[in-house]
Length: 147
Image (cartoon, rainbow, N blue to C red):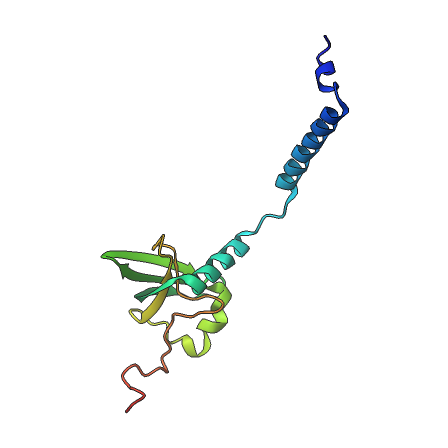
């Protein structure tokens, strides 16, 4: 008996085998040629997710590296459930929101708000497209609206 005679016994079997082969080829082509997100797109999605659903905690700004030719980096610390986290965030995309009136406000040991992922507390941000955890110098923290 010829090995191909088993596959070609019935036209429906041949059609099913051809359909299965076409599906495998289509899935392989999709996996190879699909548009993969860039690192910037992945980071933007992470920031958006944390800005929308991340928990807020108080933190402290440890260091800031503003520069014209290098990425702007904020180094900050925060404490959750007895664990102290020290993280950094590249804020080059938000330089316009940090410079200007907030340039002087990026003082060391300034209180900040940090948004973090409950499942992974080390995954955190200080600033995003729709949220900003940096305090402004113009904000008078000692005054109360009722006074």
